[in-house]
Every structure is written in structure tokens, then in C-alpha cells.
Image (cartoon, rainbow, N blue to C red; front, side):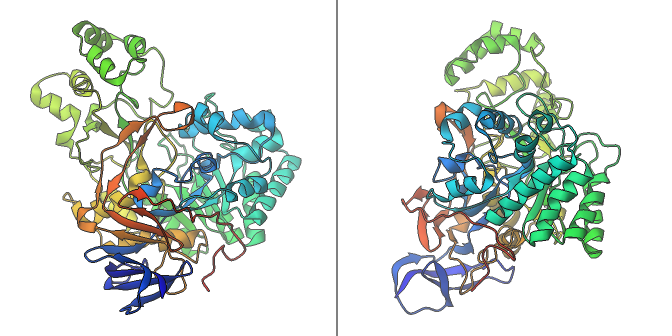
Length: 579
């Protein structure tokens, strides 16, 4: 008898090969057999009419704090994710000295918009070094597997103190000390090293992340550890990735190709289309392709949908910084919306200038051509005609007034999609093209981060619904292809060779999906973080069951109580070679 048999599903095994109908048997946490299986399982799952896939592997999350208090790792657990990699973008919580804990919290709050009060209350500090942090994470049961990268910002601040935080140049002694820390972290099981070089990543103090301006000797010494040990991924957000002006747009890829060729290790870097240079992404993809042909291993990491802010009264909106709004911001949502409909308050808010300046405003102006009302069924590829500006033009009214009136209607829960990156041409053909590049990887969900503005942890679901089934404004993609892009391909980048495929001997991380009825719910704002912190969440319908290591963790979106997830540690050659 098997532990579990999934019966009669359409098996999309993660390899990219054609789907087939059959049964899938699980024993001892591994896939035991696929095909026609007459033997019974201790638990039987009817998958007739469903798609059966590997669990999704999300390689770009910021659960570094949440992983220490939340066994579910919401919202990723609601979207078929069974493995996450955290510690991206050079921010994290180890190594750390006790006096520096609040500074690291402020760094994470500034860069990734995770409420500092929630991090302060939620994290039970039980470590100083990165290996001790891994041990602390390993000691907690959870629904999915987690792996961690060692963050440049924390390492720099630990070694250099205020000089590191202020982005002063590192001395040879500083670099040697940082190399030792990274080497110890990798030997303890870190999956890679991460850094950020975009000036759009700012600490809560407004200062760039430590490492933003690191010189090549520092980057090559730290990246060299990965080559020395023969393990790990170098992850970064390069300069220019956030759309900020650059004199030399190819400076970053120049040193990346040399570092990867020298170390033999993969480098994955964030890549978006930006409105200032909407065709630059294609040139960078071409440069990466040429570098790889010459011996590098460069992998642009792309988002499967526009990188977007969810605009609303509970998140962020164009009137948030205006003085009159600040007088009523403390009111409950419905009352606040009612007060904002008062003609005098409306007049005052609309006539005011912001009381403070958003430091990122020059990059992302309040252009109402890029504000799109979200309906009950979120649409991540809206047409230009659906924008607030277009609605206002048809009505012959100022766009700002239309935006205001839509925002405060009803109980104030109306939300809007505001693409920041990846939507320069008002369609997703560029992302469609990026997805089809073999060396481009799907990531950048930022799950666990940007709590009050962005909710892209649901990207694994929208990849399936939009690209495979629902797209009407361009070509779609095959189911087998899209599953491969977020299972085997992402797992292989990080050397997770035991997962991402439904083959005998592989880890039994499985999704059973009612594909015809798979649907994203609208984003909603909740206050469920420690200290009452608020965040946007987004759930989905259609996940019949999710299994991790052969244990059923979710049924129809509800947690079963099982917590089979573990810490994934990296080793030379990869943390999970198949048996």
C-alpha cells in the first residue's frame, strides 16, 4: 500500500514534456510510481478533471522575518508554493549584533515595506551569526520548505558598522572579514549570496542599502566564495533595474559576466521593462545570451506580470500625503470614505499639494493613464481604455477628480492596479517574449514584502490563469511550458535537484488543481501581522490539494494542520541530488 495515490489527473510533470493522464503514487515522501496504479493508497485523492503539477518553487521572497513566526508563510501557501528562497536583494537578519537588530529591521522596512513594529514584535532573536540563523529557522515546523541566502547589507553592517551602513568603501581587511562570514554561511547551508545596487532600494532613513556602491574588488571577493566552494547563486538587483537613470546601462552586465565566468557560478539579476527606456530590456537579454555563449551563466530574473502597486485607501493612493487627508487617516475605513465624500473635505483635498515628498515620485509619477480600477476578478493586462484617464476623458472631467470619486465610493474598499514596471506599452507582449527566453527565469514575487502596496505572491496562480487560459490581448503559452518555468527551472537554478519534477524518486511536492475553476480573488487588506500590522493578501480558488513531502498541507485552500516543511541547506553540487 502506498501512502497517497492521486487518481486520474492530467499529469504535467514539470519537465516541459506533454501532459498525460494517469495516477501518481507516493511513499515515504517521494514519488513512487506514475501511470496506471491498481494498488490502493492509505489516502486517495480524486484528481479526475484536475491538473497535477509539482509544487511551485518561488526563488524571490522576503520571508526572512516571517519565517520565524508564521508556519504557513501566507500568502504563498495559498498559491501552490511548496519551496521558497528568501534573503534576496541584500537584506536580511543575519549576521547581527544585538545593538544592530533595530537597524536591520529599519533596513527591511525601508526596502521591502514590511512594518517595522511587526518585525520587532514577531522576531524572537536567537542568533548572531548566519549559521545560527539557519539553525533557528530549521527549528520551526512549517507547511513548506525554505532556503536562505546570505545578505550583503547585513554582512557589511556587521563587519564595518556605521561605515558599512553609509556605503563607505571597504578596506582589504573589511573584505577579508566579509569573505570569512560568507564562507561560513555557505558551508552552513546558505543557498547563495545576495546584494542590491539600485538606488530605489532605500532604508527607512532614506539611505541606500549597504553594498549599493560596492566596488568590484568587494563584489568579486564575495562572489569568489561561491566559486571556491562550488555552490550557491549570486543574486542581485542591478543598478538601473528600478528605472533610475544610468550613464552606462551595460556597466552592470559587464562585471556580472566576468564574475560568473571566473567563478563558474550562476548569477540571477532582476530585469524589468521601464517607461524611461522601454526597449532596453531586450538589449540586456541579448547581452546575457552572448555572455552565456562565452562561458558565463547569467539569468535575468523577470516578473510574470507587471510589477504593480495595489492602490486603495488602506494601502497607498495619490491623496495620502495631503494635509486634510492626514487629519482623517486614523478613522475606520468606511467612516474615512464617508468623510472624504463630504463636499468641503473633497474640495480641500483636491486643492492641496502633498505635505511631504515621496522619494521615488520622479520615477513613478501619478499618471492616471496607468491607474486601472480592479474588479472582482483582477485583470493584470488592462487596456488603455480601462484607465482612470480614459474614463475621465470620456466623461469630460479632470482625471484627478474621477480618481478621487472612484476611490471613496461605497465602503472605501475599491482598489486599483498601478503598474510601475513592465507595462510601458499597455500590453504584456514584452513579458511574453521574456518568458520564452530559455535563460530568463520567473521570480520577483517579493512574497512577504511590500505588505501595504504590492501583492505579487499570487504570481504563480496568475501565471497559469493568465498566460495559459485567459489571455485575450495576445498569444498565450502552453500549460506544460508555464509549469516548467515555475517548478523545474527555478529549482535547478538553486541546485534543488530533488524537486520540481514528478518522477519516481523525486520529492513528493504536488499540486492538484481544478484548472477550469482556478481563479484569483481580489486583493484585500487585513491586519494579521504581529503588533496589528496591516498588509495586502490575495487568495485563490481552485487548488484542490497541495502536498509537501507527501503530506497533504492544504485542501480547497484550507490548512490541514500538517507542517512537513523543512529548511533546505545548500551543499556542494546542490542540496538535494535525486536518489
